[in-house]
Image (cartoon, rainbow, N blue to C red; front, side):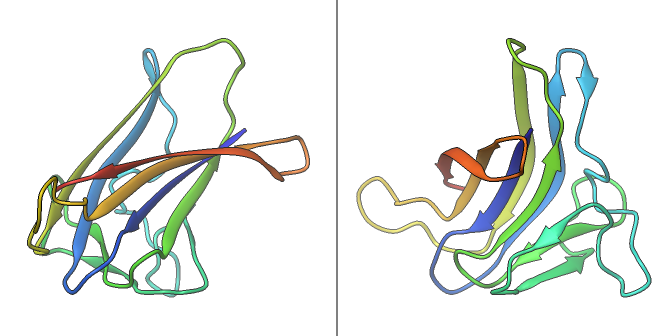
Length: 134
């Protein structure tokens, strides 16, 4: 299994996430990728919010459909565990938008996409993360 994670990196402002997909060519594996299915508390089903909080359902940055997820707290993750098969190729795609200005040489990035590789007990074996400028 792997855990797909998304986060706002740092600084003032927000990052909006929508249409997050993990594909095992050709099947889409992320449940509720566009955050349209909400539970009784108005939270997106199948997604787990980090204890730091700072995530909210928003319509402001939606790429497709009605909703997206807005991150306002740096380093707070939204994640979903997905069963994957060994020796298969996967592609992670997402639409992101930000109101955080990119400053300095190279910009430094304002969002993360990442994976935690999990053992059979759900413990992290290894992590892999990418910094993104949106």
